[in-house]
Length: 151
Ligand SMILES: [Zn+2]
Ligand SMILES: [Zn+2]
Image 1 (cartoon, protein in one colour):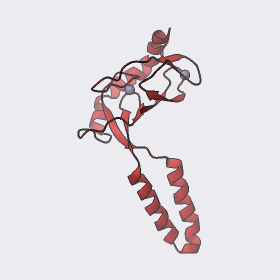
Image 2 (image 1 turned 60 degrees about the horizontal axis):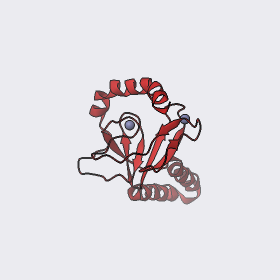
Image 3 (image 1 turned 90 degrees about the horizontal axis):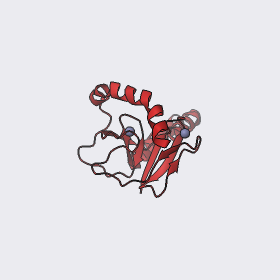
Image 4 (image 1 turned 30 degrees about the vertical axis):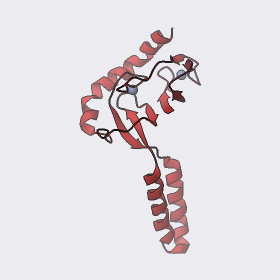
C-alpha cells in the first residue's frame, strides 16, 4: 500500500491516506472533499497536482535524531565526548536504515512505498529552479481548483 502525506489545498492541514483509495478521502480538519478513488497511473502522477516529477528523501524524523544528539551532547560532559560520538553513530545508522520517500516537486506531497527507479534522484536544484513558477502558480490556484473539484 502506498502511503500519501499531503497538505490539504483548502486549509493546509497535513493529512495521511493510503492508495489506492477505496472511498473518498476527506480532510481531517475542514472535511472538504479532497480526493476521490481512482486507479494509480503508470507512470505515476501526483494525486494532488498531476505533476510527474519527484525527488527522493529519507523518511527521517528530525525530532528523534535531534533528541539522540542532545542526549549525547549532555552526557558527553561525563563521558568525555564519547557519548556524542555514539549518538552520531546511532543517528547515522538510523538514517541508513530508513526507507526513501518520493516527494512531489510542485505540491510537496510525500509518497511512501512507491517503487524507486534507477532514474529517481534526490532533490535537484536545477529542476527546482525550472519548476519554480509552476509551483507558485499551483499554490496560488490550488484553493480555487480544489473548491471547484469538491463542489
Ligand atoms: Zn482541509
Ligand atoms: Zn504534487
